[in-house]
Image 1 (cartoon, rainbow, N blue to C red):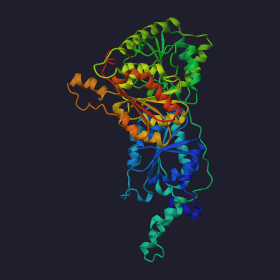
Image 2: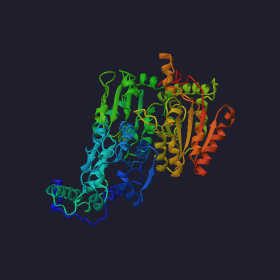
Image 3: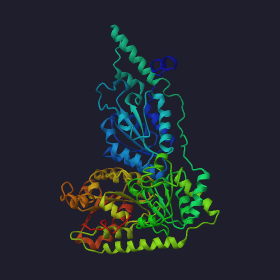
Image 4: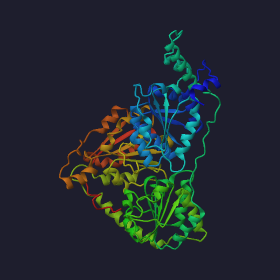
Amino acid sequence: MTQAADHIHIKVDEDSTAYGGELVADVLKAHGIPYVFCLSGGHISPILVACEKHGIRIIDTRHEANAAFAADAVSRLSGKIGVCIVTAGPGLTNTVTAIKNAQMAESPLLLIGGCAANLSKGRGALQDIDHMSVFKSICKYTISVQRVRQIPKLLRQAIFIAQSGTPGPVFVEFPIDVLYPFYLVESELGIKPNAKALSDKIANLYLSTYIRGTFAGAFDKQLVSPIPPQIPYASNILIQKCAKLVQNAQHPVCLLGSQCTLPPTSTRDVVEALESMNIPCFLGGMTRGLLGRNSSIQLRHCRKDALKEADVVLLIGAVCDFRLGYGKVLSRKSKIIIVNRNSSTLYQNSDVFWKPTLAVKGDPADFTVRLHKFLSAQNYKCSDSWVETLRDKDNIKEEINRKMGLEPTEDHLNPIHILQELENHLPDNAILIGDGGDFVATAAYTVRPRAPLTWLDPGAFGTLGVGAGFALGAKLVRPEASVWILYGDGALGYSIMEYDTFVRHKIPVISIVGNDACWNQIARDQVPLLGSIVGCSLEFSSYEKIVEALGAVGFRLDRTNEHEMVNIFKQANEINQQQRKSVLINCLIGKTNFRQGSISV
């Protein structure tokens, strides 16, 4: 049925004050969405107002990218889809980096965007661009709503797609005329009363037909409940084959990636399976912290050695992209088992540097639990001697790093020492968020997440600027947690204004800034290779004063008060937890050669 003919068959209630924004809120409420992240705009006002009336909390940020990053964090930590709502044109284009980051991190995020009225598209309307073309390549699903009654169906479908298979972001575009009430939309159409000219009569007929088609059946009762997502699961036959390979291995190694933390399998079940199998594990992405702070089977520093000696390598949610040297770090003598929800990822860069012995399409978390069941039936447990061989190598690296933390830097404080002290005094309920280059890369080998789903970093896209948005989402999902952002000073510049958001919405977080007045991760290579530091220099800015101006608490840590470092960490945590205030600690740091040979991966 065409839109023009809809009104002939379905009556329109012209006096109704109901509006499309309410339907959006109905669907979100039915999906258990407790909060949405946004930056206000006229195109999306009906959605935000309706969400507020439905008891959905509105968290408005100072930049749209941070709203999207916050929604990403909610998806990763809660198992529910995170929702970002932004206005048309620049509001949406400001989210592009964050949405691409969610795609690369396989995070199921719902992006809702406003746009010009359907009749006004392509006619020079305010903030009118082709959103579909912008987001098609970075979203699993993009759709533009044409009629009000489509809203529940299309939103349910979008959320279903986002959470099914390999998760990812989806985009639903809402023209302004499907969000406001009938009488307001009609008043803006320009229908001329008492038209006499034939051209005016034709225009009136067209506009009247259009609006009635838009609102036909708009508020008839529809389903708004969630559609259960479709999750791919490995076959028993493939898992049995994997179990046989593992059972016959002398030196197996597990590399775990973020898909191991996806619902519906609980992280608790995954941990129990891994600990029972006793296979040495290296954790990446969202699996950092999966095995706790001091697991007997987790290793951090000797991955290259482990992979060289391994006879069976299990890539459980891990992929052969740049993080594994495109597969070059894998030995051709090893039997490789790779498990992933994504078929194409199973063979990424294969037949060049590596080749899978068994490629298993299925949910990695479920695979791990079921693999353990097969192996436990055979009373399997990996040899303690193999684990201890790798542990001894890891301990040597740990001792080297410990000593490097004691070495004085030419200027300011040793960043390794700061992070080592932070590691020793972080509360057990800490959630860590990494946003930076050199400082955060050092932290990844120094600071240990305390539990599953307590570490967030951008993922494979390597995006700077995720810190504040991730912190917003994390603190809302886990209000009892102590949320700590580990910032590089360069990365801090992307989102320091969100301290205003933390204060306004009473969402207290803590930031540790490694301030070396430099884009040091770039300078490490640029200076020796090209002989210039151009474009890499910053200033030792007083970032603590900026957050104080926004209503937070700031500390400066340098050589003059280095002896107070532990007290400052403790004081920051007390202010955050007891006074419910946000804190920033500006740590002036010097240069080390920590990442120029002390760590092998």
